[in-house]
Image (cartoon, rainbow over all chains, first blue to last red):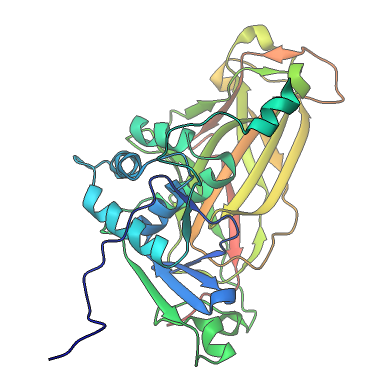
Length: 119
Length: 244
């Protein structure tokens, strides 16, 4: 019987407020877009809907807000929540978006040292 | 453009707004697709052409310097209110118009966007060889502004990147009466060549004329287009179109 490492479905945690990397070089081609990440030796093909999702990842919107924006941009009846979640997970996995540090957590006050400086 | 769409675009960071506008222009929603590839094992040439089988245009496909005939792009407005560029010359006897916001010298006399006219040119073009002068008919929103001088700026975007800009300053002699709309010409500097995309957007902006006398504010500048007599337009010429 096989033991040890076994493929298991991985539930990837979606970034609560995903943010597109600032330095991405998005190249338009005839039927979509290509992003080259030379530092990671990776190339990514995205269709226009995926790029729209990527562009809406500004660190302020939640995944459901992005889905709602996609609904409005494309004039859909319902927000394509599942599609957006899937593509955000993929973009996060490929390192094209990151999470905003501290997003999804309760707001905390300024660091004590900062507060002291401000007195 | 639909109000919902505009509402979303308004909340997108300004530097990315035009790009997002071109991404969604004329496209129906399709399930998002992301396909990722390792570039290991790809030669530099292959990587330049594209690691996937998509038809990425490359300079080699456009290298014989044959010029396509210029394409005239006319400003127009769709039935949904969206601004667009069309290759069909207008025949209507009644012009459409789009107004700038209120313009004022206060706060540094900023440029205010009048509108963004979009189109998708097929087939996928090679680099732009030349952008001809923009001919545009202008008037006033309000007759009280007669005597005001305006600066007009035109920017051509390809694939969300600005490739050419032109400006005509101190435009004077405008009137509220549409029949008295004045033709103004904006010349573009030679376009940047490195952008390959079939998404073309013309953005017009206005401000109160700088360095010229006249009122310090105005209700707005009016751009007329879409009629045979006021067929605001410009030519765009590409190097030879790729033959696939």
